[in-house]
Length: 316
Length: 274
Image (cartoon, rainbow over all chains, first blue to last red; front, side, top):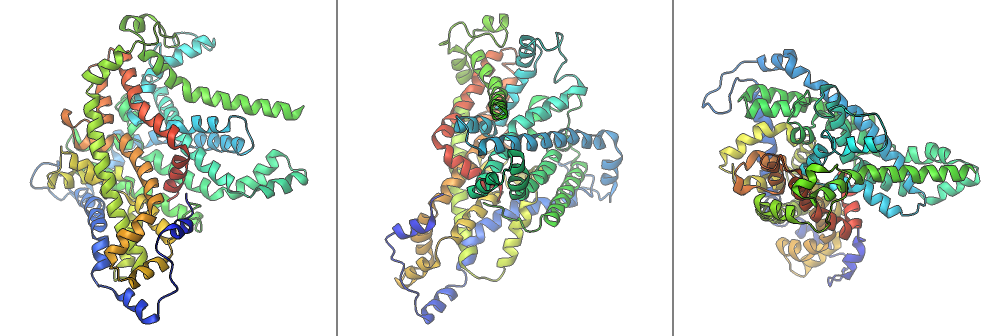
């Protein structure tokens, strides 16, 4: 990003010496309504599209509303009891585990490649670009790319066949409930690896080069450099990534919705919520699910703030 | 000796990573150039017979209504970006440059809102959008893109902190009022931050699927994502056309990435860490 002071210097406004005290006080008093006018639109939209829905959601979750009727009956905590006792709702929590495990694979891979590319490498920019690019691709395009990839006789089967790995018939990568979630979690790693990778790479590159030089003089190996220089410096960003991974694996929606619509045991918590609300008109129950998810995410974030208290803001 | 082995291992792992990243996409490109019968009779790894067979692209573009998708996405993109910049920069100006009653509350409201994943509240947001009469109009997506964007506001506030306050005060002495200062001093200096927001948010809007899918079900309101999603039905038996559609959606992203690489990396690093 451009250096701000340079930009400021380049403008026609000459940075004058500080104004006399009485002028400055006048400036600060200003016109009382001014700041409110400037902030009004942002606050109005924030209330309308974040706080009103959150408050409504708590209220809906205590009713049996179908989303259409003019009236709704208060049912207390019945919806919450249903969320935790109905097997078809509760078991979708376990689908998150696949994505949760996958996100650790993703963080490990991102860390590995970020470390590799932080040392001088031929075609460095090319490798960096290729690893990052999938993150920019449209989610529907990714869904279709991998529907093609996993379909019987598709890319994966053909590559395995060409490499003489296993033999036909290959499993139904998206049709077999035992494998489908692994395949989808794999797509998720493919999609999001690039972001973790670029964040880690940025953090590693902000470490002063002299540290490595000093370490090399002391006879440190690459592993030592990673263990004692790189790992401690990027601890905060790894912490942040782990939290995002937990929150992210609970709110997975796009990839399984586009690819399998939640068939073959791939329904995630959010897909279930959306289906209950918009297909089965169970707005009360769906709201209760959303509240449960929201509370879990808030809890996870609170734990993060507690474990890594001083890293808010990172190196942005 | 050990150094050579390590270096080989390094490049082998990088090449393998590239193959994992690229093969699924390249296969889509080659398949999009095959004819109907050619696609049916060859495997995914077979190269197309004729590399200039663009018939599938014509079909995807016309029958798949991709042009309409690009127009809708473009309109929503422009209006939402303009709105986000206006609302975000004015709010950042008020928050960074003024002390006013309720400022701490406003900041707290924004901070807490970053913790609420928007996907969880859609059930209730839907009712708000419906009540406002925005359902099945482009305004639903525009309002949501403008109204749920807190990251942009943080990027603006963070950047504004580094603009020296002397500049505002000098302008005050010259008789400028707050609106003039915002327009003539602050806004021009925020250009780098605006560029970051345009890139990060522009890509996010181009790729957004859920909001247009949920709020704009009419065919005529199809954006890029939903138009491509609808390929699954009518072209379900014609993967070569679907592949062409995927490539059409990919090309703008690839061009943008190649042209603006450095800004994109910086933007996502700034955006993701808040």
